[in-house]
Image (cartoon, rainbow, N blue to C red; front, side):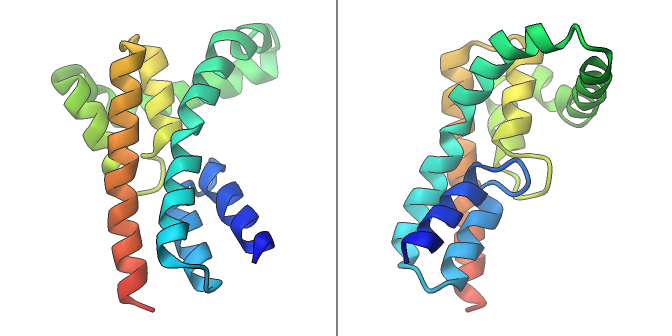
Length: 148
């Protein structure tokens, strides 16, 4: 049971799945459905402060390396392309909606990058990301519960 909880946390924190994968994983492995929801959402919300720290400190140092800079610019262009219109036009609500969509590439990682790129106030961005990922997780949780 502990192993499945740890994997649920790791999937929820991972950029490869976030809570969109952590929730179905935990439910599939017969963990308590409410525990799965809480740990997946909290793990996914914790991504935001880690990403802000990474983007503010580590990213600046790594940008000196050509390979990293090339990859970072590709990710930034991709994030800007998919979220720029919504976030610029609607601000907080655009970011919330973007993070809320339970689709690949629209979670807290992309929301954190958008926050950094568009210089959105951190407290508002954290709130938008937290609410957005919670709503997204409710949708995923409900669907996962329904198909069990």
